[in-house]
Image (tube, rainbow, N blue to C red; front, side, top):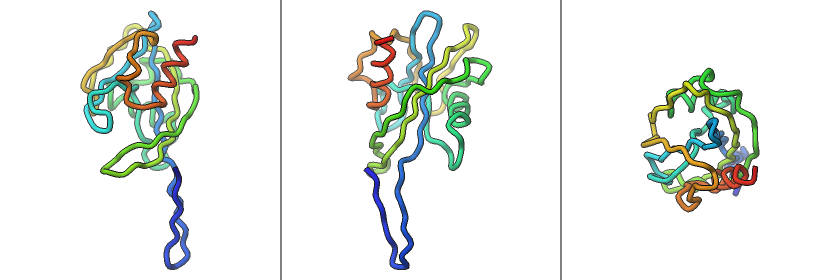
Length: 152
């Protein structure tokens, strides 16, 4: 997936995977919050809230920012996210396929929290992991995360 470019002045540029944390947000019924994507890639498909780190932003800070941008939630609305696993995917952006490192976390939403679709989220859906149609999920890392939840 990675590419290495060397300029005429011998400067080497490594195209490393961009980091993109995502959050499996569970409720007391064991349902997971899924978002319907408003943009490509995967427009109209299911995903988990999350997104790219901004520059040198730590994963945890990116999750807090994305949860606010996409669902209008603050850290007081969910438990401290716990790391589950990571995976690499290719992400199509502006006609190019870029390497992406997806880090999946999980947390529990507080019963009084009220997530609202914002930013690049069309709608929010709650579903038991075993009932999610994996063919409707935009990215392989999210499908793997849901399969891991199904086994628990």
